[in-house]
Image (cartoon, rainbow, N blue to C red; front, side):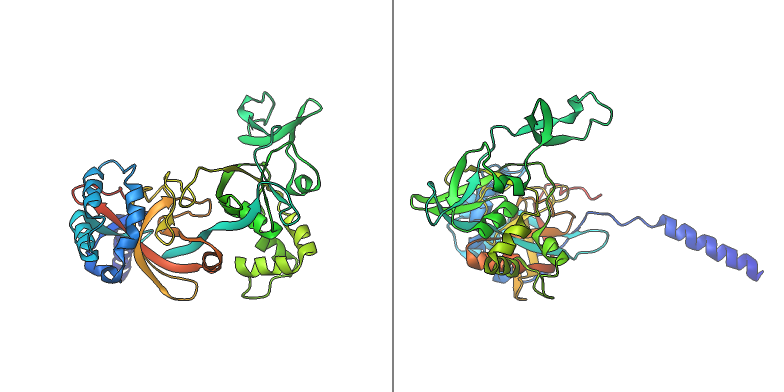
Length: 368
């Protein structure tokens, strides 16, 4: 009799486990604004530029919200908050049952330079080379030829990989020089960021990503760690930059070990770098997200900390993406430009969560 009861209990446990709905990679739980930490203290007027930019090409179904937002943009803090609470519903974002994720920071690299080479400005920022070829290997009629899109050049009638970073820096390439800048380490960091601003005698020039040489990226932190050059607790980008600038000869050797090289283009005049949502980013109010889960243009209420442990509880807008930003609860916080932004962004890796704000009457993104 005991054996029968044992097997019945085991079967019931298995059936109960099978009946449980599996946790989803992305799930929303409706909450109230009262549950958002620091919501009443956030300076919402500072978020208006980001919100209004995203409303310049709103998500389908957001037209009424954006029309009303235009009417309250110059109103008091209390009126803006009342409008948002009347028009939006907050949803806590979860991933496999967890609300907490990782939030890093990024910034707009800021350099000094000129349009002409001079004693001070000797480091070139290249545009796309004339001999750089983007090849779709699906057109290659050879066994194993389909490897996706590859970058290269024609040499002696054959398609060859394009020059590596070390090769480009050791020889002249068939590419226009857009600008000359004054610091090779900051130029290297610009290659990592992909876009930035250069202060010249003619004003600020924004540069953005135009292409790459097709070689794999190798992080400078990993390169330095392999050589035992990073002390414990000093692997952040500010520490790495300081070390490289103090050791220029070794820095050139280390930076050359990252074979990827970025080519740039000059961007139209703007008040900041362009995000993936097609609008310029707003310092401390724009967030890069994984668009598989969070629609670009969505307002989010972020709850995390900065690298010094200070709370970051504020309304932000999903306006950018990033190759390392993967997951339903994952974000990259845009700090702006300048040394302060660099120091904050380079050290930030904080636990946190966010809430998706969605218009009332509109179905939010489906969980999956």
